[in-house]
Image (cartoon, rainbow, N blue to C red):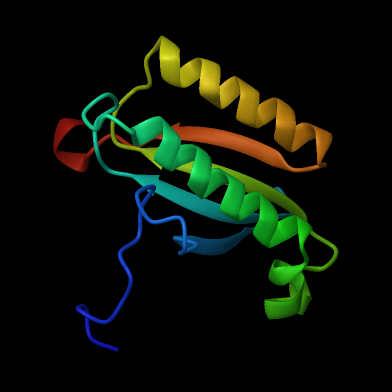
Length: 120
């Protein structure tokens, strides 16, 4: 598949699971969401995040993850947001709501700020 045919990853595309991996140490399947844009640079960024998050939750709760990856049937699931900049207060409020909802559904939610290698 060429790059032009591949759907764009990231928070702005709720139709794609950006990355699925196994965190063997935590015994969790990690569904990764990518946000490469700094927070507050796109007017509907948090709405895009909500839509992406809801897609991920549905993917797990509706059984699509286990149907596609039956080897993960006995694993806990963590939805992880990797973002390019530290979140502000508005984003933190949204993340807390997402984390609380995930816990109710026996999922985990984590946010990870990725610092580019050149600035570490």
